[in-house]
Each structure stands twice: as C-alpha cells, then as structure tokens.
Length: 78
Image (cartoon, rainbow, N blue to C red; front, side, top):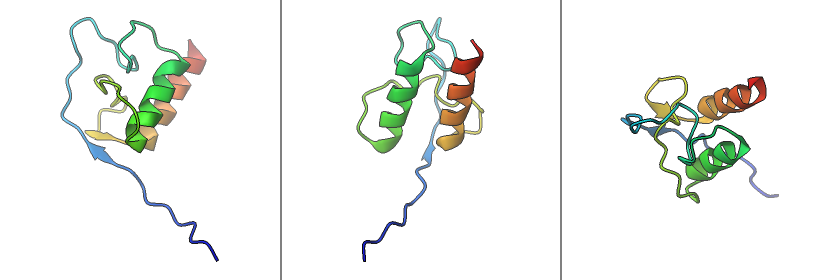
C-alpha cells in the first residue's frame, strides 16, 4: 500500500516589498493574477523561481497555504 501522507510546507520569511510592488504581485509583473498564484505555488513546492516578495499576504512571517488562499481570494475579488 502506498504511503499518501503529506507534510505541510512552511517557509519562514523576512521579506520586504520591493519598491513599487504590491502584496500579491509575486512574479513582479505589476499585475495580480493567476500567474502569481502559480508562481507562489511553485515557489512553495521548491520548483519555482518567483521573487517571493509580496507573497506573505497575511503578514505572519511564514509562507504557507494560508498565503496562497489569501492570494486566490484577492484575485477573485478584483
């Protein structure tokens, strides 16, 4: 039987926004859209090359699923 247990990914951060960057603009293209969510998800999985500045949307100092949820909510509410 295959083990299907998963560990939570939490990345402690001490990131500041870059000049003229908004929270949620993770790929630094001056837009907040689904590309930022994909970049954040890939970054959290260790496969992305996003800058991660602006990714800590709930300001708790940790990059985790709660930031991804907040980003998706932000995208939907635009």
